[in-house]
Amino acid sequence: MKDFQADTYIVDENIADTMSWLLQHQDCFDELHFDVQQQELTVTHVAGVDQIRVGMYLTAKYGILVTS
Image 1: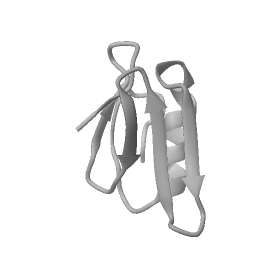
Image 2 (image 1 turned 90 degrees about the vertical axis):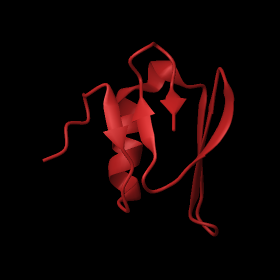
Image 3 (image 1 turned 120 degrees about the vertical axis):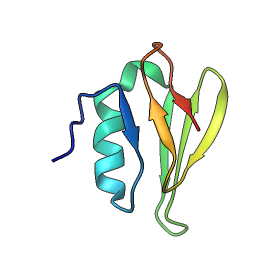
């Protein structure tokens, strides 16, 4: 079972779970965008814009979103 409250998360194929984790950590990013046609999730945060992909490591430990 996934812990969406945890400070860290590893992205898998389930985009709904990734979005659920991100929504639990809204204070660490500015904007969330999902392109339905391309099936791409992007997040805008203090360090720029990241496309979220399967296998990425996300952390909200530092009050900002950090991606691998």
